[in-house]
Image (spheres, rainbow, N blue to C red):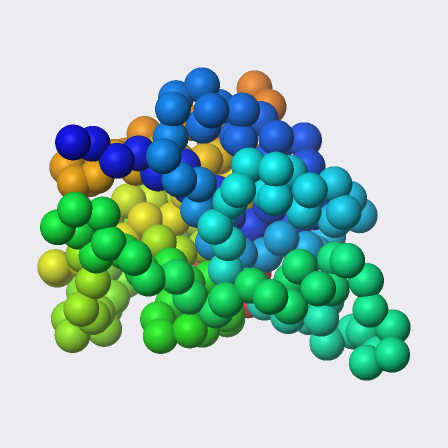
Length: 216
């Protein structure tokens, strides 16, 4: 029996591409929707973004921008957005059939910075990075690792761990559907945009020749 997971990340308070991804998941009859963090940051429609995640019953982890949002609040001034983000877990762990799944924003065990970078600025796999993370994850005791943060789009087998990053709905214009247990991944473009497999801040300024920064 196939279980279908809809995967999103780094939505950054931008509801339009998020809604398109969520509607796409509905059309494809996903069983669960997973968001790998960074609900807030950059854009201003946080309330609408959170309402979409709640309406579609998305399972979500906290990201570094969410933590920054929480840290910006006085203890005496809170909001519905604050309470939603405050209650997000750092990680998710669950099983689908014989596959164990782990979700974290950047990288295990519960990091919100750093992240698993596998691609160069052109979206090509960096062999040395793949080798590094194969070694780093060799004692990681899960079959599937779902991450975000780096604004890179990939699905790679790293040793015994299948690592998936659906990219940012806003910046990479992407989302994914993962079928279990066969580990089939489909990547979808959003807003009639071309998927940018490795988005980084230099692209905001027309500088195309930098490796993605350490903090996304």
